[in-house]
Image 1: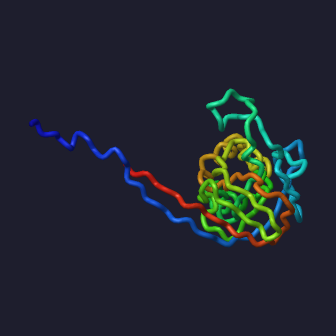
Image 2: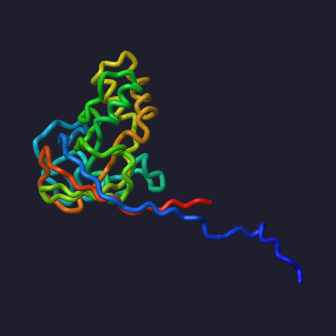
Image 3: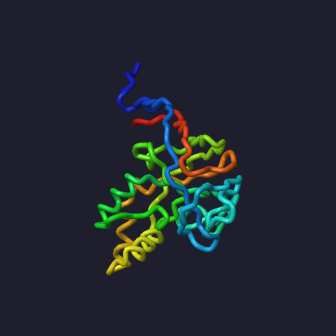
Length: 209
């Protein structure tokens, strides 16, 4: 009988590392809302959240139109709005500002709705993480918020950059994995500044070849 060379047939199943779920404690340090005609936000004391997001906000709606982030659809295709809310962290914005040679980057310049404190590496929270606000609201994390030139242009305008195009392009280059998260409303209600947040990070698995 001919022997089979097992080295030619590696194990079909990849190795999987399981990362257990865990709970974190956070805080809604500041809240922001955007007028219906522009993505930049303004500080508010509370946000009224429905299943379509923030009432009358620029990013509100149960659905949205696809853009450059969804090359698998023709631009303008109606799809679920998983980008109802934008979350950022002060420490991450400080890193980006330093990389850009700026004194600061304010959350409202880049359209943030929530400044979240207490979560190290906020932008690295995985999709599916849940945030339970003490007032009863629950939001679900969809993904990292990919930095774009539009937000960079807003920053360049606010800091009166001498070369606004260069500054606008610098933001996507320096803010990767530091731009925060996008989320959608799972359980509606009112969120107020200073609320404590219980964060439930789901179990994750990592495939290894």
